[in-house]
Amino acid sequence: MSVDVLGYIYAATVAAGGVFGYVKAQSIPSLGAGLLFGSILGYGAYQTSQDPTNIRVSVAATLVLGGLMGYRYHTTGKLMPAGMIAILSSIMLVKTVIRSFTAAPMKTH
Image 1: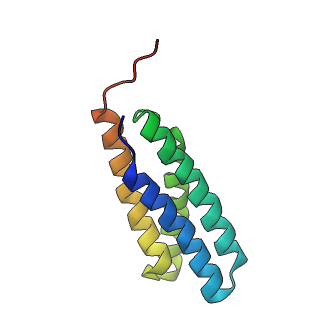
Image 2 (image 1 turned 135 degrees about the horizontal axis):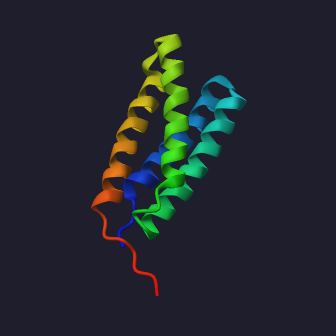
């Protein structure tokens, strides 16, 4: 059983981005979304740390966040933060799926 370090880093990055958005622009929606998605992604990283094939929460949160930020990047053209989070989400989605397919299935007693 290996810890999903990149998953935890991604979750912390998303949460920190929400806090940064609040500090910089007093954006309460940014703070709320960052902390909400960061928490969900942290829980997903915990689940994949326990069982690398248990990717539902991580994949769902990454798809929603990546989709929203990808759309936001498409409409605004701003790389920061929307484009960067869309790129990170794409990378994390691929990493999570590959890890789940290459992991040995968990044994149940």
